Length: 373
Length: 204
Image 1 (tube, rainbow over the protein chains, first blue to last red):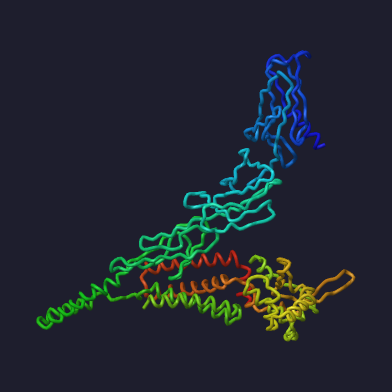
Image 2 (image 1 turned 45 degrees about the vertical axis):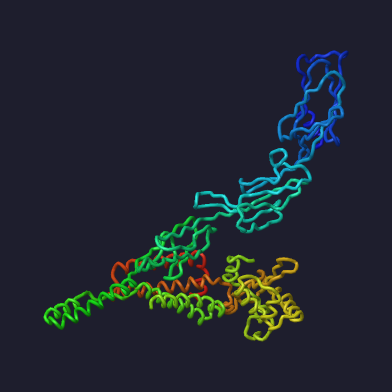
């Protein structure tokens, strides 16, 4: 049944013989054209032609072979002389044939199979198809080249090719080797093939700071928790101190900051000016000099000195706790350790996990302590 | 490898065991290789957060990893633990077979046959393998500890503010900040580990 359908398609759908001018011709000046196909890939046929009239033979460039393949015209031989045909996927090939005598024409065609690509539109075939589509001659080896990253939203969302499969049977990971494109292994085109690319959404994390250099900026997959940081540096004699982060939900315990990438994220470091070094280097020496001068002055004019002392006493004393933020961070680290100790003592957490988790917390606490000193 | 959800389901579900299988968990079987294998699989799974190989189980349960011990352990698993449904065998590849416990909490049951058909009756309390050997990720413990840490730090912050140790502005900043982080931690615990938190903490 299938054969009959294909046969009828070949006869009626793809082959058309045209006559220019009067269709009527007499038996007396009639010639013949014999049309056949190499390897009998389509039925041969004969066409009577009228001498002196223009005759055009029309042959489809491609026609169905079976459910997953097709034939594509590559050349023809007219009375023994072979001529290559410019390859095309669709449309008809036309050939003007002289009607003066009998002619024999043999068409040659090759089998082609389709190579479908899913998952991305940013790809190319290596080598490209001889028919400028996704069909390739039987036996050829074809690779698919894909752009690894495709920007969906400028500097915010992108897709990255992370894997590929052939005919949904085998799956390979695409390694992140720093290259911008990826080429699959060669695929032999002896049947229909489908290549699927696995594209993963990635989001941009921007870590900003008015001072110093930040770490953590980059592209990340959704759901990942990324450690971020900033080296605030020194601005002359004024220290820049990180007091917190803003712009997203960030877990920050005074030392380690973690941000959950749940979409494009921009976070900014809150940096405060710390004048302690300036005070140590400039203000304190001035005060010392001032005290010395006052002492000398005290010896000369006791009455005025008394007033000066009075003023010094009246100066606002530090009412509040120094470096409260840092002290609270240390308290937090202590409480976290206390809870981990409790979980361990209640045998809820194993010794291995307890050691691993407390190690990090102890490190955090020690570093906070050093900062406080 | 198994997903976290699969591992959590094994912790949350209570498995019914007939008396002849439940005996492997009882104190009387403490010296038996069968119980040592159960505990070895449990502890190794918690460390690796996934099924474990025969060689690892053999080493952990007997202290030796040679062919003889592996055969002994394999035989014990096949004859007792797999039959009782205590252990599951997973074939990743022809030469990669791994084992994992089907549950971490067990209920001893007695089967009753009557004219109305077979039924079961629980005997005693639910038996739990040690919580420290449950396959729970480090992240969970850290979140629990952080939650406690932030709760306690907020309490201290309020007390210190009442004691006039910090100015109002600084108090409000810190309060907002610590509360926000605590909310994130609570949200993560509730969304991902709610059933676990109840089991590990409330019932501990």
